[in-house]
Each structure stands twice: as C-alpha cells, then as structure tokens.
Image (cartoon, rainbow, N blue to C red; front, side):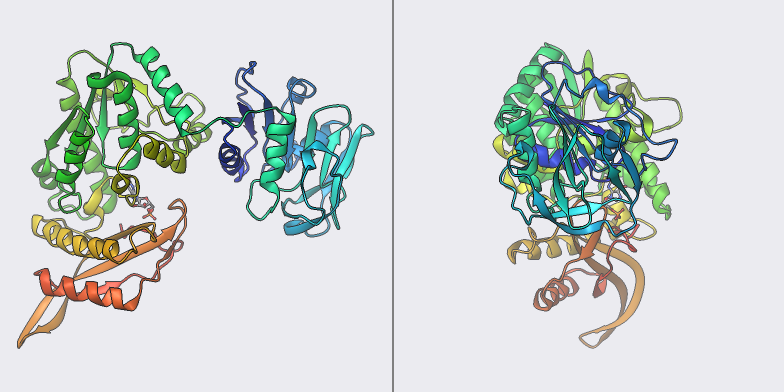
Length: 506
Ligand code: XMP
C-alpha cells in the first residue's frame, strides 16, 4: 500500500482517489499521526498544504523517517518542504503560479517522467516557489516560469513536484502517478472490487467469529453494500433493522424491504410512522425537525437492537470521506458522533463498531456493490436525506401534506425515469410549499398549495447547479401533478445553484 501524509491540502483526497483509480490501495493519515510503517508500505506521498514552509507554525515532519528508506513523492508543499529542509530556499513567488502551465523541459530519462510529453500541461496552485536547491538536487522538469517544477534528490528515490498531478487539468498527471507507483514503488495494480470483497469477507469472518451484529438499513447505497458484505461473512448473525419513519418516498418502504428480503438479508422492518409523525406535529423549524427525527430513530433502533440477544457489534455503512472528515476535525480517536440526547448514550452505541466500507470512496462502494450483484436500481439511487420528506415540507408537517408530497414526488421521479433524465441528474425531489395561490379548474376558483420541483447536478453535494430539464418534460410533469394531486394547483421549478442556495429547502 501507499501512505499519503496529509498536510491539509484541499486536494489530498483527490490524490488518494487517483491512486485507487490506478488499482493501488492507499491510506491518508494526518502528518502528525504517522501510522506504523511496515513491509506492506511501498511508498509515501507528502500532500500539499495551505501553509507556507516559511511560517513558524508550518506543519513539520521528520522526513528522514522515510527519505532513502522508501520511495517518497512530495507534492507542492510536500516538495517545497523537502527542498527547504535540505538546504534549499523557498520564497514567495513573484509571478503568477496558479492554474495552467506547460512543462517546457522534461528529463524523460527520469523514471518519474517516463512517457510524459515535453509540452505537457500541468496545474499549479501555490503562493511559494522553490528558488534554490541543495547540491544533491537535480531539476528534472521546468515550466517557462518555474525552474524547479520537478526534482529528484540524486541517488535516492525521493522526488518533488510543485504542480498537482491529481487534478484532471494536469493532463499527464495520472501517468506521473503511475510512474511513481508502479515504476518506482513497485506496486502491483491488483486492488479492485473483487480483491476488496475477498479480503474484506475474510477479515470480517476473523474479526466477528460467531458474534452477532446489528445494522440499520436506510435504503441507500452505503448501508446496503455494508449489509451484503457482512451477510456474506456471517450470514444470519447479521440482524438488519429497517425503520419506516413515514417520511420516505411513496411506496419506498415496501419496495426496499422486499428487495432486502430477496437478497437473503435477515431484515426486520419496523413501522414507526405514527411515532415520528406524531412527534413532529406543530414543529416548523428545520433544525428542530432534524433533532426530533434523530432522537426518534435512536429510540426505535435501540429498542429493536435490544431484542437481538447477545449482540456485540454495531455495523455501519461509514465510508472513507466520513472517516477522513472526523479524523481531521476530532483527532484520530473519534468513532461515532454522539447524538447528545438526554439520558446518555443509548445502549447500542456502547457496542463495538464494525465498518466494512470505511476505506472506500463513494464510487468504489458502487463498484463493490455491482460486483456483489446488487440491483442497479438500488446502486443508482439518488441521495435522499435522513430526515426525508420532513425537510421537503416547508413549515408544519401533517399526514395530508406528506401524502400530497409523496404523490407529487412519485409523478416527478417516474417521469424522470421514463424520460431517461433520472440518471443524468445527481439528485431530484419535489418540495411542498405552504403557500396558497389562486387558480381556476373548470369553472371553479381554487386556492391551493404549490409544489416546487428541484433537480441538480453535482459531484458530492458540496456544490451543485440546477439541471436544465427540457421544457416539454417539465410541462408534462406539471400537468400530471396538477391534474392528479388534489390540493395542488401550481408547480414551479427551482433554478438556484448551490452556493448560494442549498440543495434542500430546509
Ligand atoms: P444541502 O441542502 O445542504 O444538501 O445542500 C446537501 C446534501 O445533503 C443532504 N442532506 C441531508 N442528509 N441528513 C442527511 O442525511 C440531513 O439532515 C440532510 N440535509 C441535507 C441533501 O439531500 C443533499 O444530498
């Protein structure tokens, strides 16, 4: 495997993704929590950082732990740090070193730069630049303005590059990473979904033995894939719980429960609609809704988990980005976020935690799910928020409003599917607006509510843009909703991007 030491760059996760795309397993660790480095480690990458090596509080590391012992690649800050600490000089750059640049000198005899075009485009993003290098450094690539675009410390396997190979704008970035991983570190590119499935099932069997595990299914991709892996490892000792909070899409609870049963999972469905909807009565504030739903879920899940005799483990569908986030925010020991509900932690949270997907990125979870034979309809599902339709009914929630929204949303989603648009948008859903407007149906005046349609394109939900659905399709959906959903006489389409809007309305 490859260890990526994170100095805080926004691109660190991207480096890991690129390495994984080359079918090499890697892990990100904070620079100040270096893991045990054993013979399974083939090489080390130092990430970039928002800091400058000249700051007194810049992240520090004893690079002699790795230099000359393992192949080492410093990227941006990582490269500047190695140069600076080896006796070179790093200064604020006086010329623009952001964005596109082209290599105009490339030493293509160097193993790091094999098969990289002499005019290759690279992506720069740094405020500092390496001005001087120590005598044992050799420049192996330059751009017009950056002499030390890449270097090697002579006679060693230590390299530095001031550009970012992990971003797609560096056209030969993937080739460079492959040169490092395969040519220099000697990694075999055998990390793939099947090898992951085999080794994970083996590890889970060893770790869990005859122990019982409880796991909450949500209908989403992560918890479903985690459940199938655990099921393959321990069979009926995996007890899944799927809670109907009454705030799911129309028919979703029944369909999803049915498909879980078809997969052979030992799953218990719990109808807790009245509990959830009852507790939400009269609540208008979005954060209040989230708190109530979170606490109600814990209550229902805890009761159900208690009914499984001698359970020792809590299974979770946590994926790698969640782990990295909680590590950098809370320090490496954080496991589950506590929900701070009165009366201390519920019993199930005192269980040991098993998270079979906690080394995977989202796209890898989908690949693993596919290799496990999960239904495409489940794998291709849009993200759906935990609080469900509660945060898509603006203001007060009533059973009537839930029913109206479910009907309108079902018409919307079915039309997206039949028109081929469902897979082209990242997330879509209908929103109930507690606004009444005047309309006319037949000869009657109406005074009814509004449904808003939302569809966005996104990579990760952090930023998003509204999807340009065809007018004809929007017209058809609007007609169907107004003609079939009693209580709605107007449909609007949300054309706001995130930022400044968010995807959900609440
Ligand atoms: P926003 O509205 O913040 O949403 O742009 C970004 C993504 O997060 C989802 N979302 C939630 N998911 N619990 C969840 O599990 C929540 O409280 C929640 N709020 C928003 C949203 O659906 C979108 O995918």
